[in-house]
View 1 (cartoon, rainbow, N blue to C red):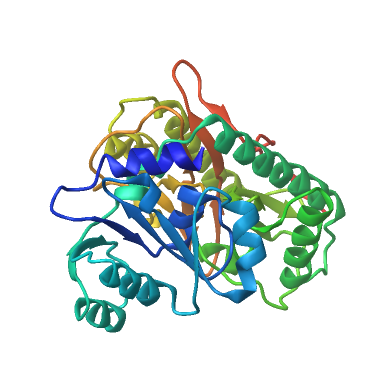
View 2: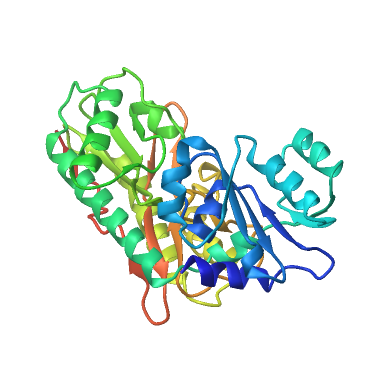
Length: 355
């Protein structure tokens, strides 16, 4: 599989370079299978046999197991080591990714001529193959199962931090490798902050509770948000904004189909919230791609260009946030498919009471 991905990338490389130096770790993992924390990769434009990966001594056993088809150059300063190696072999001009720190780029430019590129590997990563989708399915299923179990354990008086750590524990118990990102647990007025960090604040009866979390399986991320009420029946304003977000989320999911413009998908959900009178309370994009990173292409927002492709996993996550009062967000990860989308984080979206 990595061999085929490298071949696809090779076809994107421009003629005036000898190849591409890959320094983004998610891109390296996608192209090789290597999952260590320090590496650089050179993809030759013309000769697959000239591809080479560099990592340091901590990972020499691991890299040989995960990348048995690639020669390995051991060095701590991976990117610079490959540049020096290529220069010694007579290479004069290479392409580089646009995430290089300026200091390293200046050092490299002393040895080789550099041609900047943007998003070549990321372009390939947008559409997932069957193996990637299966890992996302597992991550989504664990996320939904863990959140469902957590809602059965939540009680008035628990702290946001305790809730977050318990959910992450459940991810591990159910087979995840790790959490996909820092778990968001927001109660009461904190639920009006989309990226609220869990605190020692305790859950009180009548609070809205927003939980945004995901499990990670073999490097692939899930993302899911549910909003519930703690310890008491919801009041009118909570029902009102939750109903609007629920309808908006359904509209966004239903708008997703291969070939549909990204800004149209955003509009499909956003117009529902605007019609309910809460347009100013929905201040972020509707969703984003997921895979080896929690946020990757495509981005679904009002100013997005382009259209969505089949077998692309994305999130749909509208919200309404009322400062000093509370907020609601509902989010699922789904795979866009021909005919019918596949939701990976299937679980009730109703405004249920927990605790």
